[in-house]
Length: 235
Ligand code: IPE
Ligand code: IPE
Ligand code: MG
Image 1: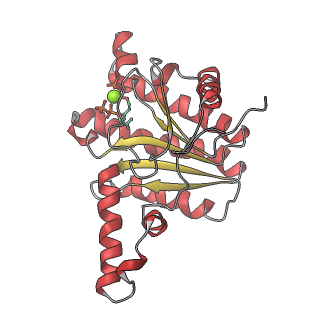
Image 2: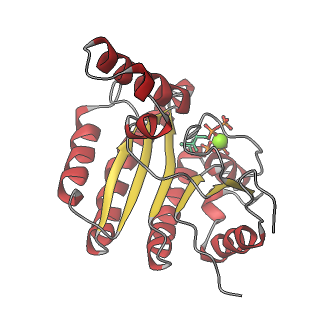
């Protein structure tokens, strides 16, 4: 049987802290290893001809962590984005960010803007990085944009539909086909709620810093065994 390649894969990259703590290291070491894993996996994903990859880099809830860890993560984003960037650019992938900019430093925002700008015309795939992102916030923000259009008489209430909502999300992305969460947690943690409506969910105990191409293939194998009925009946 031919392998079905999902169009949009999303990953909740979890378990960096526990990976480091298990080894007697500081949590930040786990984030460092996690960034290396993301670089490898993103290349693998686009080589597999998957069109859209979304990753959860930092949630709006992650500000609750110690300042030292948050500061480390912000610096790491700048470094990792730059390192990742060359390969992503070479592969002709467009980089987009989902989330809100408030609380992010100018340095982080500048790096994000540069990546988006320099890849905006790329057509081979989309790399959606969710940074300072919350799924409920995204729906609230879309609702505000749509309400403003109605208020300004630019939109009729009866024309509000799912497509319009999708277009008003942080980015207009196709639905998620496969969601992967590492580290043995069975929750969504406020990630891409709108886009996940009919996603196949794959959970693994592997901690993100131990995740690799083989583990990704296991998720794809599992996806291939699913019977996606979308509410219908199998013929
Ligand atoms: C995921 O790993 C990375 C981020 C949330 C930024 P964690 O840091 O949540 O690792 P655990 O869950 O504490 O092990
Ligand atoms: C989700 O992981 C956010 C990211 C992977 C960036 P968390 O570790 O923050 O989520 P919870 O606390 O387990 O829900
Ligand atoms: Mg975690």
